[in-house]
Length: 609
Image (cartoon, rainbow, N blue to C red; front, side, top):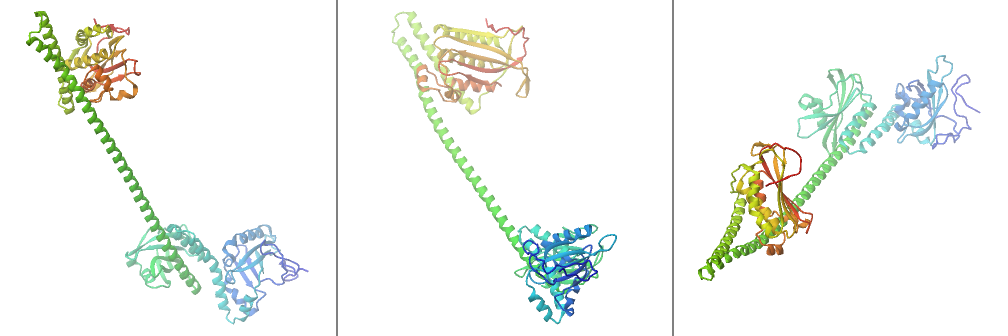
């Protein structure tokens, strides 16, 4: 049958038939006596405590529990279930049960707890009776307690066990991380809450420095001013110098802006080297027990080791980061060297190609120079040897020699022009030029050549009321047009060669002056065209698209390159368009407008004549 404290008491205990299972928290083993009987207030503060398993002379072991929260003597990981049960009892006045270990020995004692409200108070339960039933063999503990004649020693042991569980939790927390900031924060929060101090600091310390810095801070109240990040000069804090000089905790009374405090200071160490300071600030009447001093001393060693490992990890991480950066720089340097090597190889190939092109150019040019020169010599030799049958034939020989001389002069002029352009010594005087006059001169030079090959030759202008005046150099523009039209006739066997001009009335700046627009001149033909993959070589100096064609059609390959340089020197651009071999081609270039003409209409272009 059920046992109770008294027949009138509402406090009930487990019957002999009751069973408690340690793993699940349910009852599974017959128990006669509770290990502990406690009276708690509604906040869980111990009002009285005794153990039915100990004689009365040994009950002093629990004297230090009076006035302390019961959670202080439970395993920290299991305090939540106690608080939940206590809240249930306080609000419903019904019995509560939970499982939690009691700090009576190393590792604690597994126990099943029953919380019974005191019945008969109208306003609800004002206190709670807690019964703890051991779920393991405690005979060794009870025997030791009964054999001890000094209950203060047992009380100290109980206090030590109460702190040990929570200190073990703090130690586990700081060992789980290698982040220095986290270690500092876990230390101040854990010690501040454990010892219920007003303030707790962890200070970073360097052996060569004459000061320490508050690295982390715990404040019990938001009303306290924060010192985190503050620098404490050791000359102004003599008790810190004492803590550094001795391996034991230092306690003293300290005046602060908030009032007088009891200070406990201890240095953290690793292999006899100081790496930090722990400072605990408590009310002035706080007395630190020997157990608390020993535990703080032990924890300081643990914190010192954790700080040393975190710093070593940080240094290793920083070194690894530096090695990664150095490796990245080496990779980048290697990439740059590879790029430089590639560019050097490309430059070498370009130089070889340029050398080949120049050699090809010299070969073609020498051929081009010898042809008119041989013609001059041949015709003049015929005249000198009197081989002409009559004066008319003699004049014909002289005319042919003159044509060869003019052709030779043009070739030499091309070579000289490109040399001047490459050296940057060509000066071009620019001024107003009539587009109609320029194209009329081109027609006079070119039309006979076109008619000799039975090609249609047309020049079209935009319809305007007044003259189209260009800004450029007449001789150079004439040179460009003759070159482009001459090429078009040379490479066209059937069809048409056409010159068109189109006004682009868009203002632009050249040589720090704004011009009203441009004229776009196009020279198109129905000739042999140029394949797409070879078009990028058209404007290269000393380069011909096809050596076979050069030998077939003649020329030095300088015409387009000279034309492009001359047009660009006068503020224009040159473009080449061909859809492929056999599809003809179009070369366009732009020239600055000297003044904007009045456009009559947008009708088709008009012939130049």
